[in-house]
Amino acid sequence: MQSLDERMIEAGMIPVSEILKGRPIDKFMHHTGVVDIDTFGQWLEMRYSEMLRMQARMKLEGREEDELYEWVMSHCASLGEVRVNFREATKQKP
Image (tube, rainbow, N blue to C red; front, side, top):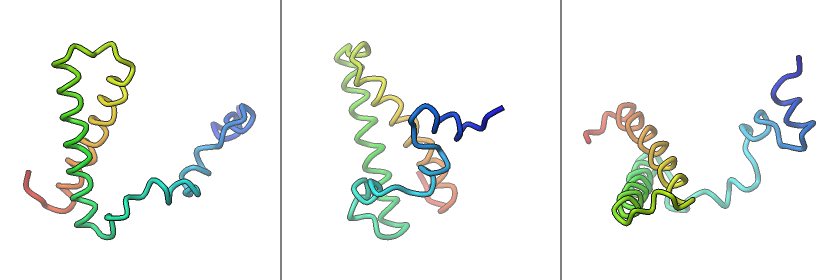
């Protein structure tokens, strides 16, 4: 049986193992204000807050069928999980 990476390569995709090594586009995704653990925490709070507010606005506007709603909801959930674990790892209070 083929590995996931082998199957992805055959399908013309970049394999997970390569993506996890880092890619040139990473430098464009990096927020220039994130330079240490404290600024990462600030960035994380900012992004989570943005997504949470966007999700609430869309819900209140009845836009659950908007294709963007699912994207916002998934980002909010992902950032929320990272935020909880970041706070635990750094012993920050909510």
